[in-house]
Length: 257
Image (cartoon, rainbow, N blue to C red; front, top):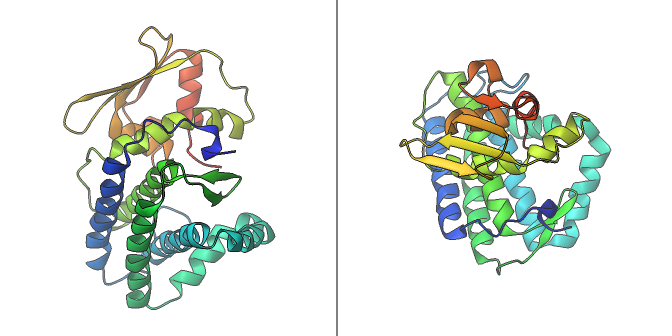
């Protein structure tokens, strides 16, 4: 299966790749100014160092998958062996490193990942968890991860950040994750189409799905992204739903298992 069966033909890599790089630099500017990385973030048990370590580890795995795909089997076996503890153990191992070393690792890794994804031939696949991916999906996935874990850090240090048009990539993945959300909640996926109408950071309208759909989600792009990445409970967003299935989606929305 390629890209989890998603149609990624609408992804413009010439836009998404620079946006991924920009997302990394924005978070870098924040964490570089924080002398104390032991501060707790909203993720239980995770400090700022854990968040950066997780991003650095994921970047390392992306490079393994692209450069030495046969070696990615070892990554999968390690994840299977550790089970639910996999992400926590990986993050803890990285967080134990000196701050300067971890920062440099993350910086170097994310630059290498952007270059590796840029050099891939269109449609070229590489192994990933439960699927083979192309750059069309991995680029917005890395952007989403950087933004979501970055949000945890912004929240931890009490700094608000200006939303940007980069949210469009995250919103799109959130929409693609609708079926996954119902699957993870062990609920049947609604058969009828959904309409999602969001207001972008500069007031521009973003819309997906048929205009005459009965199931509708409306609100700001920022709130939608915060919700689908599970960074905010639904009650703390301005999102509204029309239709029982649309309401349920907002209640259970997610972008990963």
